[in-house]
Length: 230
Length: 154
Image 1: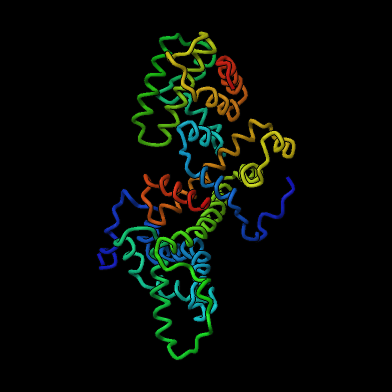
Image 2 (image 1 turned 135 degrees about the vertical axis):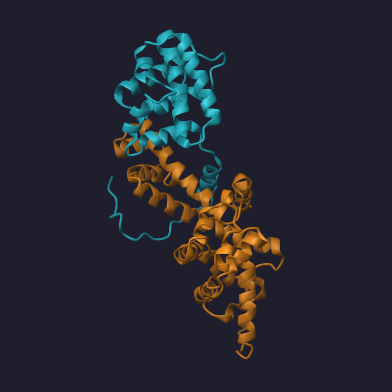
């Protein structure tokens, strides 16, 4: 067993999330982890960076892509997060903070344009996390919708997904939906429920990948509901 | 349904505050064993699976239950064994067969003996029967729809 293998073995098998399984699956798995992180966290981090006074450091997209390339290119970056515990999204915020500090040092001689401090996200960590979480929620939902649609497509349930979209995303009651699709309302309800399960599973899986214990997902969802309505 | 080509790239989905609230609420609901059973039946090989589940060791001969060939004692025994399997199911398939056996026994009691097998009818029974009526083959759909109607609720 190589030292890399030994390091990877410390994830307890019974608690493996999809992300953990990717982490122990070698280079191909790591590529999937990177894709997942970029897909879910890129936009929230871009918006987080846009709210900072040091946005003179570069274009937000370039900064975040540079951060991912630097940190996710390190073999132990996510292992350190697993050892540290907590939410992956907060680990990435702190990571981006350190990355920006390094960039500031490197670019010490570059003149800074005047910034508007009033536009900054507040410095206290709770306010930063809540501001970040508002954007994260958008990203979380979009990613869960995308994954659920893919799951439905792969399982030959694309029609179920279309009914889910009409009912849950466009707000059509089953009676109207029935008129539009020609499906009996009762059948439409069952089809919606089938696709809803795929969405729920995707949403909860992403949250577990963010570092939340499966038994605490409902508690975290309650917190996100409070954030979205505050 | 008229839809753009499914391979077309789509713009990012707008997620309003109201939609986010609605979808996060959906995320909080847990799937029930009945949900798992309905999902299993609606998969592409679901009809074949349903047919084989009706002759699984727990159920024995589901067709006999539907046709009214089982006594109340036999149905109560099936219900009790199904409940035990439900509590000890190691896989989602075992769980799905157990809940199917339970619902089959309850529906058999209502349709063929005019009574519930439980002192207090579980609240979830009408919607479970309605779900099964929507996803099972025609003769079975009629059986579960009849059981739901006999409970006199939506």
